[in-house]
Length: 106
Image (cartoon, rainbow, N blue to C red):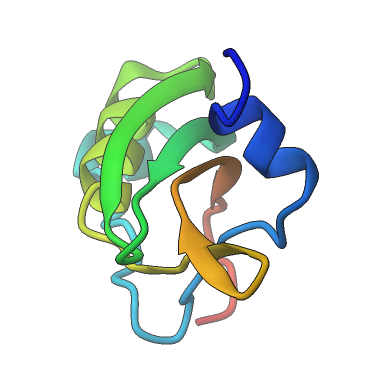
């Protein structure tokens, strides 16, 4: 990006942070439970100035399409504390891991 673009702003910013307490957890797909699938999906998330998700892309697959799809769908509904630069909210990009673990504590 050019001067004043997203990349330059990120260098000076506090990164966006997911509001984990208020965000829905992904529902473990039934097929994944039955087959014992576990894994971590890494998503690249564009967070808008208002803390809403602008775009989500798969950065690293869990190895299971069902887990990847649920992670993408869920994170689209998340809210974030937006990144800040010079005291003002800015659009930013963060990577979010979504872990799927069977028999994990709630």
